[in-house]
Image 1 (cartoon, helix red, strand yellow):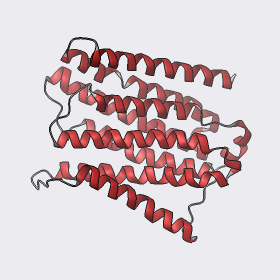
Image 2 (cartoon, rainbow, N blue to C red; image 1 turned 180 degrees about the vertical axis):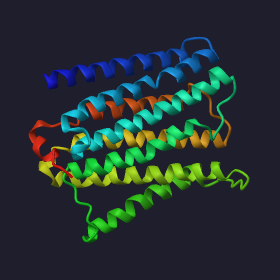
Image 3 (tube, helix red, strand yellow; image 1 turned 135 degrees about the horizontal axis):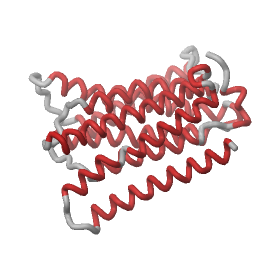
Image 4 (cartoon, rainbow, N blue to C red; image 1 turned 30 degrees about the horizontal axis):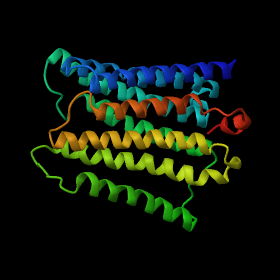
Length: 273
């Protein structure tokens, strides 16, 4: 029965994503230019994040919620999706009820930035549930723990922040501009190291599922960077490619949460902390 529910949940996730994708394509390439359509899409596609979060909470109960490592991992990712949906709704509030361009920073960043600690929480417990040992006693682990985040930070700097202009009158903006990449480098690095080490654990059975989570986090990482750059350059527009990048990250994370459970290693994943 559980496998049937998962299959139906996956199908519904694909239907939601495909419908929203078709809508976005029609808005961008077929329908006449209409700012209302753009705004409506931006206000609606967060349903993908909400659906993924609800699926995550449903399947987390199979692990006893916070009583198991995998339960904690799924809940962390689910809360991250909910935080993203809060950000979406807050931005829509500015557009529809305030009738103004979305400010940055704004109350929506409570949700967007708040997703970072939830994702870190989720990926750390996913690594532990997968049997990964991040002991820094081994030289190889020391190198990975230093090199991977450093490469991501350098890449982020040269691609996105090389021409950054500091405005000391906007301390909150500066904090978010650098807080987003620093926080995201943490969860992407942990997910990447978990994926790299997973082939040694449990015969590599978790490797594919970890990769899906890693891909979702990377798309989220790119979506947030795209928003930051476009916001700094004052070229960001509602309903365009950046919004679709967020939709894609929500969809991939939803699929990851639905399919994390593996019955073969159920006893292993249900270990108490």
